[in-house]
Image 1 (cartoon, rainbow, N blue to C red):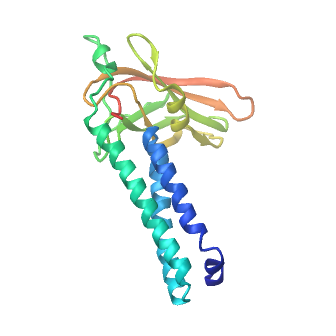
Image 2: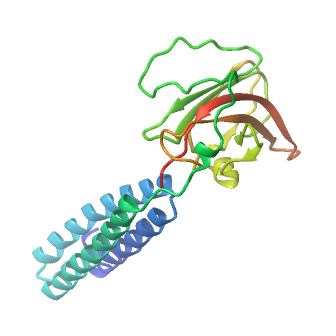
Image 3: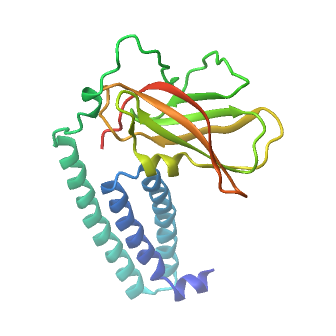
Length: 239
């Protein structure tokens, strides 16, 4: 391992540069899940680069050590400034997403409210199919549980629509983020457990009604079938 690091020492700071650039890209593109993955990889890369500095120093590879150290500090400082500028602009930029305010919940409409993430509610499971939505770490970020009877192998995913105008919400994003691959099931069971998805339309606190549909795509035939739907009060994630 030491010989590999001494020979390919430059790959670790290079990987750090790539990950930092990706972190900025995912931050700007509002992809929190990918951003979180990259940040974990950055943490592991940081540990690796510290280990490489120690190995280079112990083997008196001073030029390589100095180059790696200065490059890491320089790139880290530049990326940190960019992230700070992006965050500063986002913090003070006026919200222009009026989707929730423009689509108020009709009086008398029946809807469900997502469970709180760390609560322990009494859940009534419908044997014909049961969808449970949970609030995530921020408004607009949700998790879902889904119970259903026998299903062929394939994918479970969500489609969401604003109720009053039937507007598709975060179309491709929700389909991809909510997608779960399942094996064949032979009985009623929990086929999705706390899987995360994000609704982007609207801002925190501007609640509106969304019809959340659960779909299944058969792995063999490619046929897509709607399994059930349920109306929830939702809000959008503030970018």
